[in-house]
Length: 317
Ligand code: APR
Image (tube, rainbow, N blue to C red):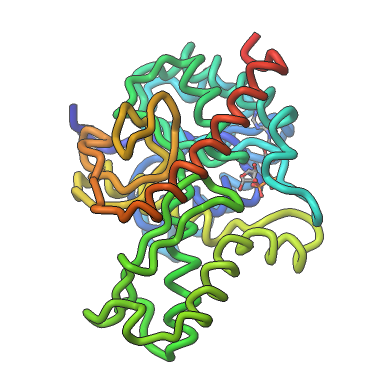
């Protein structure tokens, strides 16, 4: 069912990703925003600061900060960003125990207060945390998804555009798989001004960009030293939220629950989907080669190992 009237989007976690995302949503006047965090005063302060920019950036949405999960009631969409970011040297997977427990809190509150909301999940490790939230909320699989493929593809497209000296607007490309070192950038499905990437860039340069994309988040963690990326991650979540709210029918890579598509079952893994008013309206099947498919399955196996760890650790209770 389509969202009617002015949408309400709750963003859980008012840290770097959450507050930047709230700003993107408000500045596009996409929805009213509720920012939730456990730190007292912080989401309220950020919401007030954002509200005070409204007469200058000119939007009429409401932006509310709160420590009370009850305020997410009636949300059309909840975007989950609460979690600890990694430190230099850590992998996203190292966050599973701490962020898994935070995810349980988020999920229990979504189930209690906003059970009908679409869920876009952003906290890391992305695919396994999406599994945790899905298990607890029981949200229909078309309405829950993780944000990573849009981010990974955006990093990949930026590196290509930058290397070739062309506009980012003219580079189309997709990264599949889990949001980690096993992600699968697809040069064969990457186009620069209509030309296939392998025709306009030497293989060793493509391989270097693929590798840099896989390590794209870690490169930023290493530079920032405290915290991880948030401008590009929030842009990715915003693009997905907009595609659903505006019923755009975008084909975007998201962590979607697979039921045999691409030969993968029972896992959230990054694949292209059609995103519109019903959330994931269709899994988009790319004609992958055997080699590409096996890279995707390898990535899915990695996600499966992390999901097994979630169960071993008893995170779901
Ligand atoms: N409920 C609500 N908010 C919480 C909870 C909770 N149970 N636990 C922690 N938080 C809040 C923190 O208080 C903090 O403000 O989540 C926020 C996280 O913000 P940052 O530390 O700035 O982290 P950020 O960079 O936004 O990353 C958040 O997204 O990209 C991923 O790997 C990243 O998992 C991390 C998440």
